[in-house]
Length: 95
Image (tube, rainbow, N blue to C red):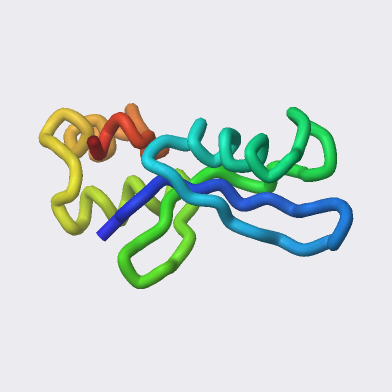
């Protein structure tokens, strides 16, 4: 089950990857600001995605397939996925 939005970042100072989580993807950027980062300075955004209940990071593409398979999205999103009109998951699709 998908439990939150997340973004994978690479921190320039440490050369390490980290994942920040929030209700929406914008919350992850707010956390960066609260940690003292200026917009687009000191980090690189690697990928936006989602975290599962078992702490797995899923890309937006992986997340929509997972959410459809387990029935976590509504009929509109499911139909758009099967019709190949929607290939990525957005937090608005979940809550």
